[in-house]
Amino acid sequence: MTAQPDNVEQLHPETDTEQPDRESILRQPDAEFLAMIEQAIVDIEGMEDERAEVNERIAAVKAQLVKHGINKHALKTVMAYRKLDDDKRENYDLTQQLLRRAIKTPVQMELLDAQIERTH
Image (cartoon, rainbow, N blue to C red; front, side):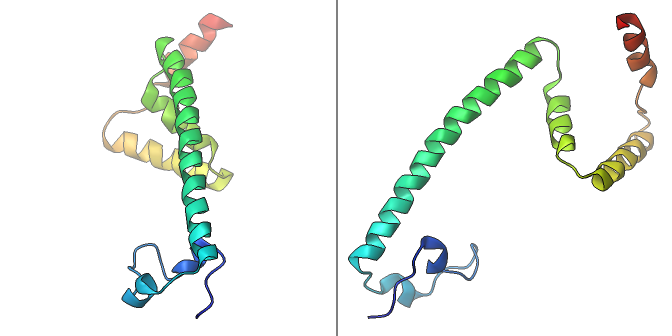
């Protein structure tokens, strides 16, 4: 019998988009290999449950911000922006300005400046 992979990643290393060949699917796996697959499925299901709980908590926090007037699309953009490296932030900022200029909707900095003046 041929050696079985140690984990699911080794089962079909080609790519996620390719289908395994027929022989790989039809070979008779040993009990250890089947147990590894079963455990992987149980682990994935557990992680999906955890992710669902985390997603619910995240949604609640975001809803609270929206309730206080924060635009949900702006929040999503800023959260993605925070993850960018400095060089990518610069490119994003320049591109954002260019795009806003192209559609004739420049950032209204005077609105932000006026709000800052009122609060300080």
